Image 1 (cartoon, helix red, strand yellow):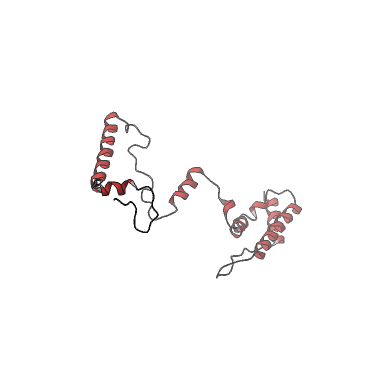
Image 2 (cartoon, one colour):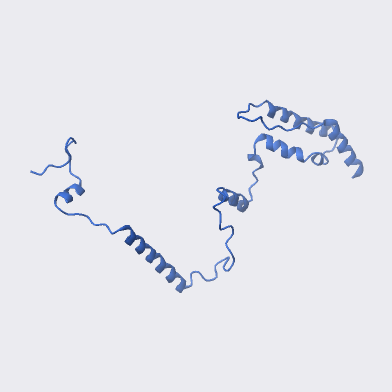
Length: 167
């Protein structure tokens, strides 16, 4: 009598593979190299057929070198390409201290459009408050946290006054 399954396993319906092996039927798979050659041959035939039909004629960018073909050195190449292609502004994604540093670099020129001294003082004091708030945030890591220096309110007001008298 033929017994299905393996010793110690729960009996049940036999798998087709097991039945075929017991009947002496061995499934034959083509070797991987043969399959790969067949696929490569099919791809080559498809490309040659498309070339004969003219599918590759007059494509945009034809005859020009490919941009940045060697991207193996930079693992973030696709992100940088996406940012450039979509013209994304990622200044809002910067850490708070970097945003503050970027903003600080625009002073005092950023104040020149303001109408009066009260608005200039308010803008500079607001910046200084945000700097202090950033310093109060907890920092994790082995190094000291990056900091941004505060602006001197009187110095910024003086620069604003001088710009007003000159322009």
